[in-house]
Image (cartoon, rainbow, N blue to C red; front, side):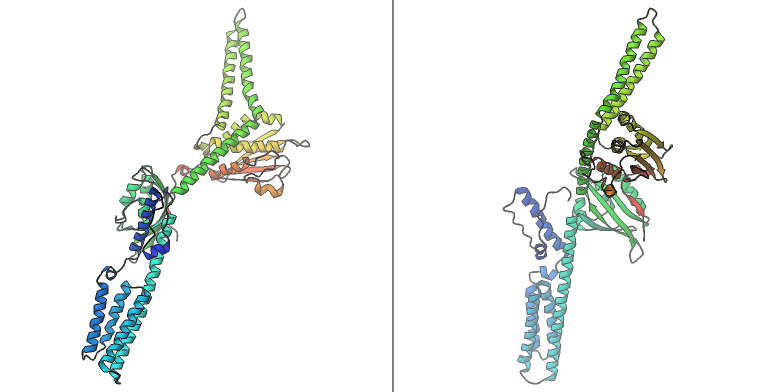
Length: 539
């Protein structure tokens, strides 16, 4: 089960022989306890997947088979019946096949054949009796054929048991269980792994109520909706939800199933349930690492814009001082000019708000926060980034042209992360034009509705361009064309855009320079829908 410590799994030969190695004398207490449970589970697997016959479990079965062989021998030898009594030895062979392996069955068969021949010699001697010889040959043939059939049956059962063992172990190791669900009767059949995932006893009868009982309260409505949609039998089940276990732990599971029809044309779902808790935890850890790396990259980018940031903050502060001095001068006149003072104070307030807005935007970019998906206007995000790098644009003498479609469909995303993407693209384009002296340094920022389902943002510069061999590697981690670059900025941009369900790429400009573009899905009501739903069945 997800989150469990590593378990020493009994080998398949051990399971096959029904005697897993459970000696844990040289292990720690916890590990030994877990391994003992694993060994018991392995034995239980064999007991359930290959139930022995009643005769093999009955201690007297060997005695009965032996006694029956003696009785048949006695009747065949000492009674004058003109029938093939020795044919009854096939019963002994069949009984032996239930508690003996291949070699033992062969030995019993040979013993029965020997008793048949011995009985013939004792009763008829070496005289030539065609009828007696015929009955003896019939009996020997019956014993031989029965032995072959019994051995074939054993091989088939062994193959079936081995297949069952492999399947059970494969499901346990992959944390994937199989199930069937008859809609009309609500009858369900679960594999053992599903019982393990739900942490129910194997003797428990599977029902929908058991599933509901383990469902996380926050996912209960989603699960009921999937049940209702699937009840018609025309929907495939594809749902990811959480389980709340009795000990308070949470598991993530994914259910996949499709409808089929049984012999009576009743709808029956056949599917699998996968415990994806470990994968979810790994995904969350990866997202946390990506968020930390993105935060470092944002702070690094802001560090490169220190001069521009200082200017953006100092400019309104200097204006506040200027307007304050002017207001004092208007107050110090013989006749105070209150209207002018009021105007100066209002301008001071505006400048203070501007400085506060700059600082707030810088804090939003520099702080490490969790992803907050909201409905956004991508044009607003572009303008917010341009406001932060106005000084950088002016210092590099870049002419910015905006071609932003309005109105645009909203996008569903994290404002800070999308600001980081646009900031990285704009700074890269500005730096690509730093060495250009023979033509205007032009930066075109364009936004378009790319059909009704996507929004396209394009950043086009007139810089030095990029080598055609490097276009496909531009967004790879640690790839950079800068002497002092780390090769992480554009890679993180790609991770952010892909996490938003979009795509980012680079291409050559018609003239000099490079075009950087990305698309984002347009906001839809389904964007906030929980993961997992029932979908139409396909043939």
